[in-house]
Length: 207
Image (cartoon, rainbow, N blue to C red; front, side, top):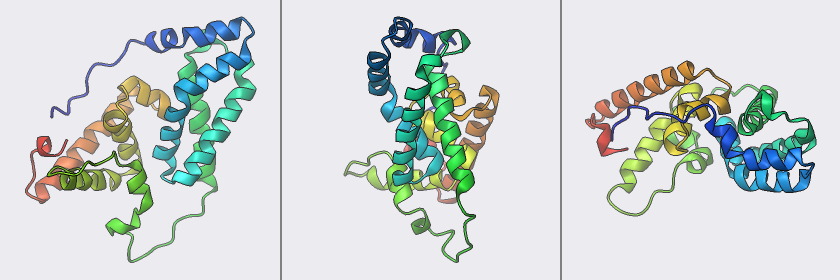
């Protein structure tokens, strides 16, 4: 599989995608607008929380809290200042960063480098792996992804596993697009190196 990032959507695409919700807000229809927003973004908000927090239970709480914050601030959203999706992702990202800042520092452990140290977080982040000859390979690749530094793991997870464009990943993480591309480049290089160590240098075998 070619790992070169595909072209991403034009800047106005996100605004156009949510034009119906913006129209409802402009008409004062807050509840229908929020219902449409939840239907479109609830799962995306949860996945962003899970990617950033790596804790399914905490991600669920953060997603619900983020949507509640969006509901409260929805009347003040101005489409002229940016796409609705960008604003939602910013609210969600900020909530996750606040929760991360409150976490106690991790304690050292002899098991820190073991695959089991990732535990349920890996299972939650990993894409479903069907039974068959490719299952072991996909599980191995996912474990290698989870072992990447946080910034690289987040960029790669959003881009490949969540099928987000570079622009969307940048909006969801609050990073410049050039930085997202750098993280993707470094993540791909790291994966190739880890696969080469296992005699599996061709990423097409895994992706």
